[in-house]
Image: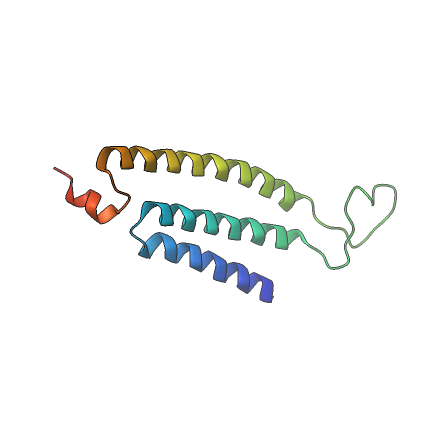
Length: 112
């Protein structure tokens, strides 16, 4: 149970980084922290204490087996998160080229 609370704490740290920071780079890092906390949470959902992998248990009847579905979903989530992060970083670079700053309060003031 404490591992789930640590995932929640990690998610809250990332959420704080998105809501309270004014630098775009820090906001992107907060988004990455939130993503990694959710991936960790999904992996923890499929974990079993003293469990065996499904590959090892193919020819046997094993009752305590690790669930492979959350692991597959996390692999998919990592790829999607990588694409989203690359997109957000490219948008941040374009904003920096246009306005010369990563600070969102200064970008809002430059709006004409």
